Length: 602
Picture (cartoon, one colour):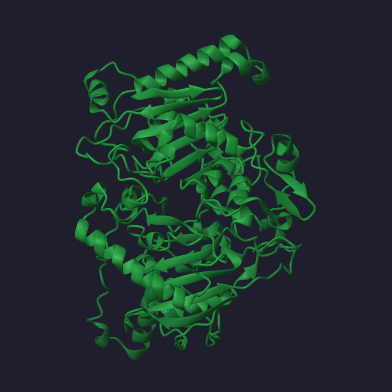
């Protein structure tokens, strides 16, 4: 985990009085460009009524910081599903070993696109939650391959202008609800608030995660961009949490001991190969006492092997290898019935002590040089991340049950620099006040108009906690250069990910209804070109979606100027405390269609 030095060195202006006036002006403009990282239009920003609000909006003036103009062309229509860091156009440049070409490979600065990603022709505002869980517009995700290949397994089916999601899957073609009912019978902790967070590796169209939402369990559905075409985009179009990702050569962007449950339904991950690194990564991110659920090969091989194009001897061997590997990393068989097998990660230090004391143990215990929470471009290693013995209340059995855990100070709060119970309670209270103010400024917040929300630079998940009773979910993003607060987010029963906003996020275009920013431009402008951050926000924001940008007064007008070039309408509002140093921008993205379908992307 990288930590950001927030004490940036300020430019020395002491000698500027000795410079000629002309040179002084040039230096000041250059300094402004460096701080802003943004380009602004020459004209005043038009202040539109994005929503009706009780308070009167403030004028958005021409930016005093930057005077050079910027404009953005439209990308060509073949970029409508553009994912910069997982771009199939670039796959041939990377190796096929362990599917590394499907991992994040972001374009260099000189190859970044500076154009606006268009929606597909015929795009419509998404169907609203909860109806969206069962259907979406075909033109919003116009992919036929997955429909043709998976319709016999009831993943989805095309019905005139819509895709219908019957709730089926490879291992549950007759419906996900019955599948989860059986799982709950095997794991009673799914019913009483003990299990709150889950991850689904190889999620299909996220029917498992969608069903768990109705049962009070928040799931991150994970899948790569592969030949199944837009699994993650289907999930997000349905209003179900999802992110692009693959367990390959790098750690997943989550801290250790985070999820209460992990699930794989015939995800075809070779769990026992390459020293067991894939299963070791599941072990790392799973909370002590948490559950790993596997359905599909080699579970129930005695009755299923004929349909797997294999032999019973091969599947028996695979199952025995899996059992041995799980035991070696302190998993125990918890329950098994039909096609579902459940293992539980040990919360007993005795097992891990044996690992530490046995020099011949395989996989071995990870050495102390490998930070358990380091998860941004961190290579996988074939070793067991042992839970810290200092943590007494982080295992699943000791964690406060949902919903009480949301407002209970997590044990790992003390690991954050300056963190304690008082800071946590203050942050919790602060965001309740801010969320109430946001709803006055943006009345759509809290209604079925806003479902998928991203808090782009959260600290402790305060906004998500304040909105927990609304019909939405929040992806909490913690900067890979900030203090490591993401474990606190997960300990509260919320979900999130690490990310560096100098790069594109791991999602498809048009996947979020609301983006929230709290001081991101102020804190990151010296590292990232803010123009590209704004372009990335535009890429992942749905047409007619909103952005709430809370920034210093110095940056607010600059941001609004760039937003205008993105075809957003913005208005500037006071904060809840009417601070002179901080403003809130309420912005809305315009729905537009490509006018250069056959032109080249610039």
